[in-house]
Image (tube, rainbow, N blue to C red; front, side, top):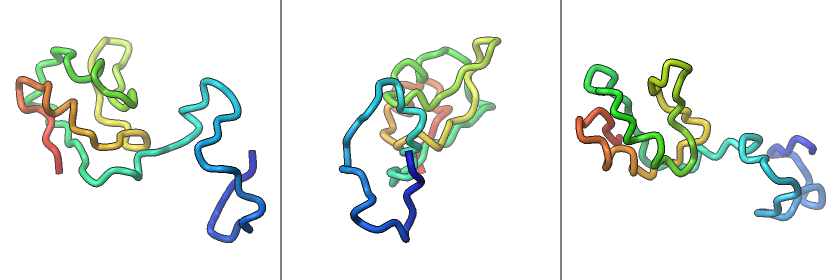
Length: 94
């Protein structure tokens, strides 16, 4: 895999959307696609666990104590599903 940047010539780019190996989603940080961003309000969170299973990008980490942590913005695309399912308004979209 070669690093691609603004100076990479067109003939050195790979075809968009081509997946060469399985299980490589973590290699591609896609969070910059966002137009809105979820904000985690820790003081309102009751650790109910409803948000992280609905995240399509696995961008809500859960630690060893089974407590959710702040968003992984490298992968969050800002869909807002987590904010919709939160019954405590612990996630707002900005």
